[in-house]
Image (cartoon, rainbow, N blue to C red; front, side, top):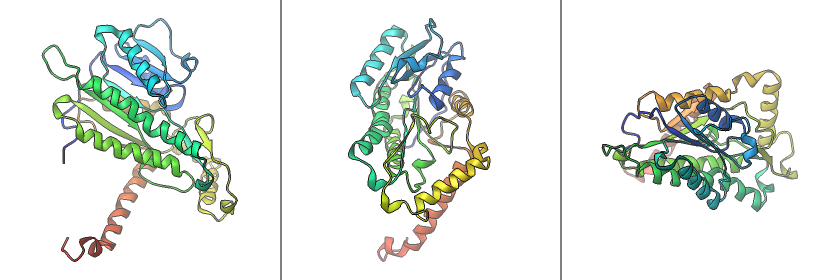
Length: 306
């Protein structure tokens, strides 16, 4: 099996960051952090450029672009505009695929449009941006012929490892990002120095309850309070009312962590759970899988010793 992220990564002093979904939340926090670094360069994107007004104008190191990750033409146009803006000095060192929204609700009530749009945004949007980024990163070399490389941070979630009731299509999108990212990471030649990091935060203090969260229509068969999705909703809402919001990660802390991973001069981890809740629940999921393996060991081996 081809190894992943085999070498320590050194973030260039003039690194260029491309971040999707910068209108609010995680994307905005990362964009604000990079914009505060005088020598780092930023390509901040959002579907509506007006949502990027919090970033300063007139700074040659900051480029604000319209980008709809569900449109291949929009992705192509953004990369073309970035190359034109920075000219012969265009490098792409760090990409953060953050654009997305949560679709929750009863799976049976999801429309074809709702389920396809969720996958287009979470999964295919990540694919479109990442494949364009790889093409730039793997060909970029320093004057002495060494591959400059880069890092692709794909923002997954605890939801990319652990499936919970009432969010099946959000889980599907994040699970897809996880598997696809691991596979593509194994396709990279070690000399290219292209690194992948799948970021798996638990709850983050964002406006997911605003324009970043969509709901399917309620389905009458699932409305009884004893149904798993309704019980989960009850416990989550009760926890928030009781002050459990303190368990949520601040977007600024997440941004600082990603910058630290990029700048610390060490190997990039393939997976990065963030938050105590994410770490504990992912560990529990892995331990549970080991137990399930033992239960079916004899069947799996089909009469052979394992």
